View 1: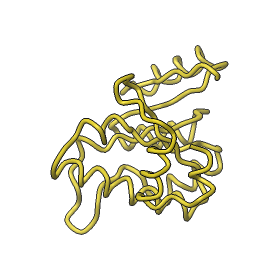
View 2: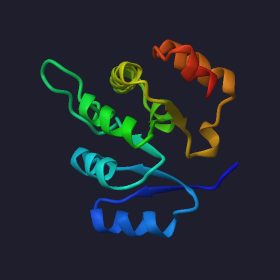
View 3: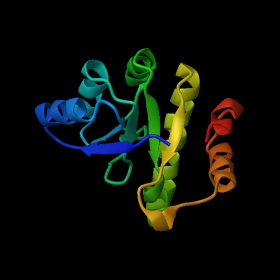
View 4: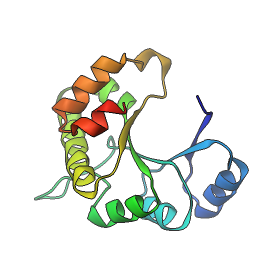
Length: 151
């Protein structure tokens, strides 16, 4: 398995330096700033865009999942995989877990439409699950069969 590097930065210039430094590794980019996420998708070469759902406020009539059809189109052009932060799902509970799952479900729908790949990203060892559990969750979230096969 190839080595992965997770870049969590808020400054675009610093992100660019990190990406240049880790060119030979799989680059996973994560940020809570939606504008920065889009800028990175447009201008830099990353392998996975990891979307965090925990500290978001939903809009009145719609979920704020940090991902939209425009970003989906850009990600498709750049061949970027959309990452689901599995640690957030495991470590949340109650209403917060429901909101996180609903936002992920919305992103799954967008990715299906744009024919994008999605992947669970697990950072903490204690949150590791077997492949069948992840596939089952993928089915519940509405992932198509092709996407689930690659988990």
